[in-house]
Amino acid sequence: MNRLSTSWGAYDLTRFPEDPRDQLRAWSAADAYLLRHLAGEEGAAAVDLSGTVAVVGDRWGALTTALAGHARVPVQITDSFLAQQATRANLARAGHPPDAARLLTTRDTPPARVDVLLVRVPKSLALLEDQLHRLAPALHEGTVVVGTGMVTEIHTSTLELFERIIGPTRTSLARQKARLIFSTPGPGQAAGAGAGPWPRSYVLPADSGAGAGLIVVNHAGIFCADRLDIGTRFFLKHLPRARGAAHVVDLGCGNGVLGTAASVADPDATVTFIDESFQAVASAEATFRANAADDAKAHFVAGDALTAVPPETVDLVLNNPPFHSHQATTDATARRMFTGARAALRPGGELWVIGNRHLGYHVRLRKLFGNAEVVASDPKFVLLRAVKGGR
Image (spheres, rainbow, N blue to C red):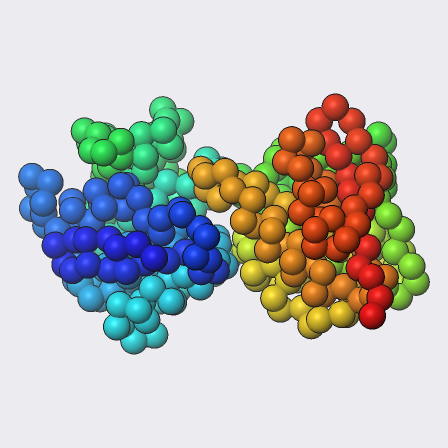
């Protein structure tokens, strides 16, 4: 737990799920800079927060928690299930009631009118573009638009998006390696910004193994949205075949191509697609619907790894775990996925994991499962298979 001090008070904040080993903060200098600006501590007048305040991309709820007592029910819009859960916990820890903020996902309809738009710049430029397009019709000439991010996260392309979709844009001086972005909606500009370019789709080429010929649908923010990433391509060339009416989980599903390929290969299987990104789950469902048989069975879950799946109900887990949390490199997500997979698998069930060779997943899998077999490898990737032992 770490404390964010503001002129409005101090807040003890954590990420989700809480892990005492996690040394990463639940807020950044960019969050603190934005809050100081809103409170009038950076040389300009305090921002009027009496209207509808929308907070986009609040990573762990620091902004929403601080604003909850000073804005009229701030609206958080996030692509992250984990961020949404962290926000609920941080709001409660700060003593706010559950209705002190309105929590929306990137797939929900945004407010019809926004008077203050606050944007925590995401890692994905495509996600930023999509969200600005979705929110532009709600802006008016008096809307205050302020973005924030670390200096390394704000590029010329970032500013060009704000300029093109919102209106004239400038940046602040840097403070503690963070910077603010100020955009002014012009007359009719936001309303005429037009529809965004997402989702996008493409067909997998013939050399894509079990995925050859599949239509892949990507909503904004999905990793490698314009092409199949090389790790997944390698996985598809060695994809295991489900057995009969097996329960398969595509864990960290992204656009769902692994689980969809498994369903197409064995229509009797039931596939559960799980990701913490709401955009990813929507992409996986669209990919599945575009390719699977009409009577194919699937479930789509935005959640925390396999916590929503009952123990010993799964036959096969397909996993391409991330090793980043926003800008930070960490194996915390992979560790949670592997532990959850062991609990969810039936005795004899299998976890198949693709990863960069240098990540050394085989060490953790052997410690957890007692075994880890190399199915296939190349100079960059290794595909591992771990089997859950019987009772």
